[in-house]
Each structure stands twice: as C-alpha cells, then as structure tokens.
Image (tube, rainbow, N blue to C red):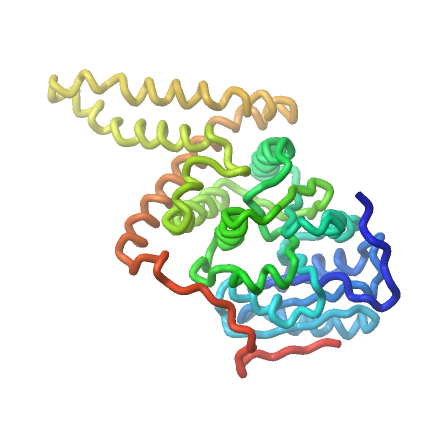
Amino acid sequence: MDAPADLPGALRCSVVVPVYNGAGLIERCLDALAHQTGVQPDAYEIIVVDDGSTDGTAAQVRAWIERHPQRRCRLIEQPNGGPAVARNHGAQVAQADLLLFTDADCAPVPHWMRALLTPFAEPTVMGAKGTYLTEQSGIVPRFVQAEYEDRYRRMARRATIDFIDTYSAAYRRTLFLENGGFDPRFRGSCEDQEFSFRLAAKGYRLVFVPEAQVIHIHDADVGEYVRRKLGIGFWKALLTRLHPERMVEDSHTPQTLKLQMGLVALALAFSPLALAGRWWPRLRRLAGLPVAAALLFLATTLPFERRLAEHSPRLALAGPLLLALRAAALGLGYLAGTLYWASQRDPRQQRRRVSLVPSKQDRVEGD
C-alpha cells in the first residue's frame, strides 16, 4: 500500500533521536535524516534530546541546526535520565501525529522515513519496526548483523509482531502517550521491548517493515559484545517480571537461544563437579554432563552456522565461540538482574506515567 501523498507544509511525522555523549555520531545521524527521499523536507521535524551529555554533543547539534536553517530541527537538553526518559520527552513536545524513533549511532537510509510511514495508511496499524544494516567488515559486527538478520527472517513470516526496537520504530503519538510511553525504570536496555509487549497484550496491531533500514555501528570487538549482552540479560530480568508470558515466546527471540542459555549454564555449573570427580569417586558419574551439554549446544548452532558459512568461512568458524559467549553473558546478566529485582519492590505494583510538562531545567532550542 502506498503512503499518502504529502501536502505542502503538512507535518506528517516527528523523528525523536535521544543522545548521550554522542559527539562523534550525532551529525552522521542528522545528515542522514536531512536527506530522506519521498517525503517533503517540511513534512517532518527532527527532535534531538540531549540526555545530559558532557562531551559537547549539544553544541554540535546547535551548530548543525544553524547550518541547516531550512530543516525543522529542535534540540532539547535535559538532565541525564536514560534513553526511555529522553524518548518520552521528545514525544511530549512532538507536533506531528506520528512518532518515529532512531538512535544517534544510526544513519537511516534515504527511503527509511517513507518506508516507516507507509503502513500507517492502514488505520489499524499502531506501531512499526524496521531493520539494521552495517557497513563494518570485522568479524564481530558481521556476526551481530547475522544475528539480527536471523531474527528478521523469523519476523517476516508474521502478519503482526509484538517486538519493536527503537533504532527504527514508529508509533501513533496519541497511542504512545495514552499508554504511558517507555518505562523510565529501564535505564540501560529493553524499554522498547517492554512497551511493545504492553501494546501487543492490549491487542494493538504492530507490523514489521524490513525496508525501513538504518545503518548501525555494531559492537567492534568481543569485549564490547559481551558487555552489551550482560546488560541486556540484566534488564531482561525486569522485563520478564513485568511480562512473564513473554518468557515462553515472542516474535523476535529464537527458541534455540533459550535452549543454548540453558545448555551453557549446565556445562558451566557441572564442570567443577566433574573435575572434582578425580578426587571424589562418587562425583565421577557427573564427568560426562558438561561434555554432553557442550555437544548438544553445538548441535543447536548448526542451522545458524550454515547461514554464517554463506557469509564467509571465517565467520562460521567464529560462530560457536560467539554463540557460547552470547548465551553465557545473557544468562549471567539475567541471573544478576533476577537477584537484584527480587530485592526490589514488586515492579508490577509501580505506577507508570509520562509527564506531559517538561521540567523547568530542560531547554528547547531550534525552529
């Protein structure tokens, strides 16, 4: 279905870009947003929310606005509150009926905006999700891209989805505000997943738009990759406390990932006992458990390994190790998060809300 034609001066969408210490990235994102095709330049506004940056990000955005006076771009400065708070703030001051979200480390392709707007010509569509691309050539970023493409194949088979990431996302603004926006307790990750789970549970229609692509800067090395997965695991613990039904299945997460997490946990848990069997004969029967878990783990990786091999043999060789590190990091992060959130007040009893009045400390600059 084609998107409705633009009307001169009609504001079709507001693009919200949260940023924290993104001085080296934000201009790349803004330049990409300024060169969108199929949408008139005056048909969208860009709202950059600087989340308490200390590296001169705000000054860079102000300079960009001055160099592009013909663009509808605004800068909001707020004390550091996390990406959920920053995105909510942008949504509050947005003037269009449709909210588009992307991140400072993303460069939307020229047709990104039109692709995300197109499904909203259907009145029943309430939210939409796009996809990642990468221009990096390293093993780790190529592996990360292959991970996402594996999940995109899963989502492409569904008429509706329940999982929207904010690197390429769109919502109807009224729906967004009426449902409280992103939960500000998620300061590190998963706030976008939680919000889309919440909407899907209410029966709202969310769709996958693979053409809505953004070029992302993926993890550059193994250390960065593992740290990110640890953080995701931690916040997943809160997410599953709020939405326990999503532990069974969602439209984005492969079921093999959960199995791999269990097998890696089993191998790690029983390896010390198997070694102790050298001195305590009664424990020798456990010696085969870590090996069996490792073999089963490798068996679960074969379908993904075949897809990695289509990219390159080197990528396929690195696959089992990176998949094991992924499972271990997610599992350890989830364990830490489970212990932490168990010690907190029941999150389901905490009231969600989005303030509709910006703080007096916040500054808004732009058109």
